[in-house]
Length: 448
Image (cartoon, rainbow, N blue to C red; front, side):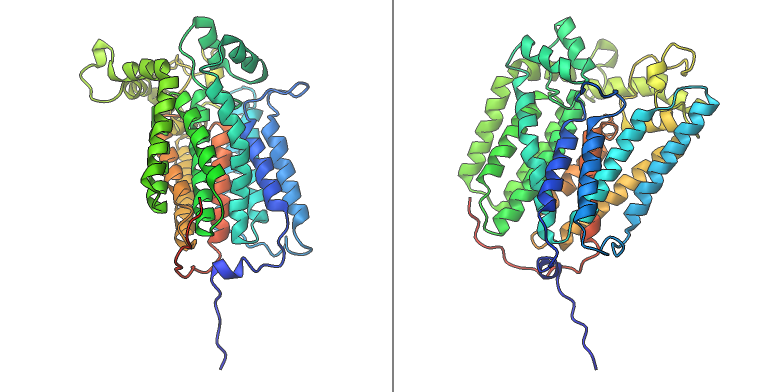
């Protein structure tokens, strides 16, 4: 009689003999990829985003770091197939639209999809041990700190600083605000305040997950607390309230999970207060906009921005979608307004929703597939959190759900940074899903 011995993930992965230094390098490269989606580099066409080059580099390193024969033994997850199928289907639909509607093929959408897909593959191949997940997150967090600093300085450093940033990033919204004298909002190297707010939501969650892991293993985490503080201040500088609210939930949930002392909570409150004081003019202006709706909308209890979006959907987006519900109008539909190759209903240059954007560009079926795939990936994150020894993935679970919900009103997954970070988290979760459950262990004493 033979007895099968099932080793918990916490033991089996830690003892893997194939550990290399590649996870920290891959994580840092992917962190750079997510951070530079808005950069415009000389001698590179705008369609060739530098983030793609870094994702290819990360994937190449992950492949080369695998032991001989190990690549062929990599188990294929359902999410792997689903993600690849979604990207291929999206490219096919865009090719069909460019042919049937006599419009230009959108290479930028292909680049965004491939950047996220290559990043996903790099993480799937790099995670050999449970520590590798958090080592990759460490690389992402390290890069996120200077991105946050650049963004936070935008609201206090003046016009010259922001003009320099416009010169090296694709930041049409920031450029327009400078021209019109409107209150500024942080864009950093990402290119837009909405995209930056989504990026910071994911990186704050990554930092919180890393802090939980290090605290459980009695490793110092003060530098991570400082990183979270800097990123949260930058989040306030985006003046984008929904992602700010999600970030607050992530930080509070992490504090509760870690049983932080009252002194730590007071420091966090002081930090939030300091950020509000620094960006008081911008936050107050935006809050007034949200609470004081125009006369024709004053009978609604919804914030002004939500009311405005609903109006755009009713007047423009939904009628245009219903004209071509299966294949849509092509990814670049909003670049073709008033040219005769776009639906006559749309005038506002954005659908103000991720799901509406996909539906109007590539049809309702693909929008449903996209949402289903993202929800499936989120469920894998939730499953991975249950398998980890101290539920260290919970911040990313909260962030993933928050970003999916907020994307009803923002186009977060169309911004390369959010999509890339979401699929990094999903790739690690897919790898954990192959392992056995972890026996519950008592966390060791934390060291701040």
